[in-house]
Length: 140
Image (cartoon, rainbow, N blue to C red):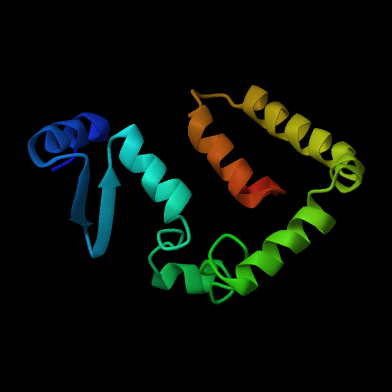
């Protein structure tokens, strides 16, 4: 239904049905908001109601039972996790502490791309690089 030009398909639906629509994308009920006024209403006044993502089985495996900050439902636990990440992982001193490691990983990835003998899908390679954060030789 949506195809490659999802934004255009949703714009056409919005012209027909209005700026707020409810769709089912696969098994996931989805609300589409396509006007600035409606988006402001959703994001400013009702943000907590719409903050959660649908619970997917894969998240239980990827996100330690949906307990990490990216997959846990919005609520008190999520707020504590976000605060802990902000204070202990993403503080300026902590980010600066790992600059050397980040630089080494980027140099490694660029070197691997430069050594490739065939055409390289850079998007795929960089996707793997960022997914695994500390890539190992066998990934590429």
